[in-house]
Image (cartoon, rainbow over all chains, first blue to last red; front, side, top):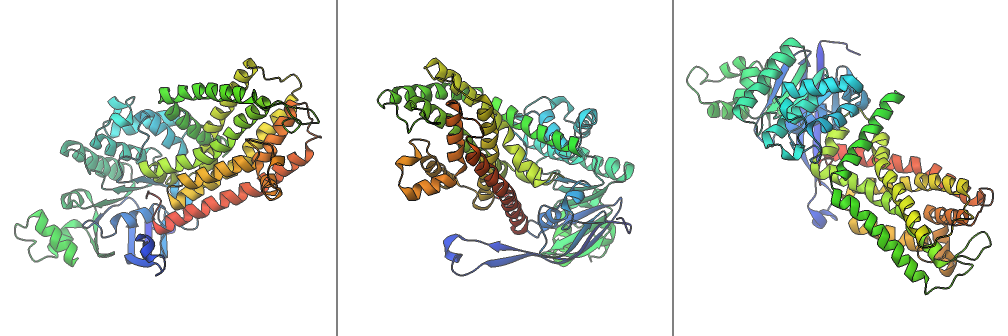
Length: 265
Length: 270
C-alpha cells in the first residue's frame, strides 16, 4: 500500500457545491459554486503541515475531503496509500479527525461515556479503550473532568474533547481543523506543544492543521500550504514563505504578513 | 471482526440507553401513558359488542383484545418510523452524525444499531401493555406463545427497513415531521389498527394487505386465539419475503443518501 514517503497525496482535486436558494431555483437548474480547483499537495510521513488562509477559502472542505467526509468531484486523494474514494472505511481506520464543531458530542453523557462510545466505533475495546480514554484526556488536560457531563463543559473544554477524540484510536494521520479555536491561550499553547512535540516529534504522526492563525502555523508547522481562492498557491517552510516577501526583513505585523501571504502566495 | 461489530453495536445501544435514561421524567411518563391508553381501550370496548371480525382463528373476539393488540403492536411501527429518523436528525443538529461517520464503521451497522435500544424499550412497553391489560380482563388463556414469539421477531424485522427508509428521508430532507406523521397514520389505518381490514373499501384492503403491520397484527391476534405457525404460513411467508426485499433496498437507499451528503457536503447541515 505505502509506495512512497507521502502519507497524504492530493492530486488535481476539484470541488464545487450546489447552491440552493429555495423554490426560486427549482425551475432554473442547479447553480454550482467552485470551492476548490486544481488542488495538489503531498504531505510527507511524519510531517506537520499547516493549511493557512482566511475564512471561506476552502481549508475545511479540503480537510474534510482528506478525512473522507466530503467527496471530491475530480482528482484523487490517498491517505497512507489508500484511495479515500475506493476504500473509505480502511482509510478512516488510519485517520483521526478533529473537526471545528465543538458541539459534536452527547451533552447528556460524561466525557468518559462519550469517549467510550467514539473509541468503540474507532475499533477499540476493553482495557485498551479504558487506557486510551485516560491517556487522551490527560493529553488535553481534561482528566479531572472525566466524569462530568459534556453539557457542563466550557467552549474551550469542548474543543479539547474534539482533540481527545481524534487521538483515541492512535491513528497514523491526524487532521485538525482550527483545534485552538475558543481555547484560552494557556491551553491553546498546550495543544500546540502536544501536536508538535508529542504527536509529530515523539510519535512520528503525520498532521494536517487547518488554521487562520498565522502565529500557530508559523510556530509549529514544518511547512505551510497557503490556501487562497480555492487553491493552494504556495507550499514552503514558514521562514521561506516569509522571506519570499519584500517586507520580510522589516518589522511586519502578523496581520500584514497574513494579508500579504494569503493575497500573493 | 465479529467481536468488533458486536462491540460497536453494544456501544450504540449503551449510548442510546444512557441518553434516554438521563431524562427520567420523560422516561417514566411513558408508563403512565400506557396506563391511560389501556384504560381508554377498556372503556371504548364497553360500547362495542364482541364480533367475529375482532377475533381470529374462527373465534369471536372482544374489541378490548383487538385494541390492546393493535395499540401494543403498532408501537413497533411508530418506533421504527420515529426513532431511526430522530437519531439521524439529532446527529445532524448536534454535529455527532459527522463525527460518527468519520469512524471506520459500516453504514448498515450504524443505522441498524440505532434501532436496537428503542426496540428493546418498545418490547418492554409491549410487555407492560399486556400486563396492564391482563388486570383489565384481557384473556390470554388460548395464547400460542411460539406463534406470538415468532411474530414479535418478524414484526421487528419487517418494520426496521421502514425505519431505515425514514432515516434516509431525513438525510435528504432534514425535517420529515409531517411526512412521517402522514405515513404513520395512513399505515395504521390501512393496516387495521383501529378497525378490521374487512371494514375498509376493497382498494384500501389491497393496500393494507401489502403492509407489514397488517400481517404482524393478524398474526399476533391469531396467536392470542391459539393459531399455530402453520395456520399463519401465508402471513409468515409474506413478512419474511417483505423483509428480504425491503431490508437490502432500504440499506442501499440509506447508503445512497449518505453518499449524496458526502458529495454535496450536506452531512453536517440541518
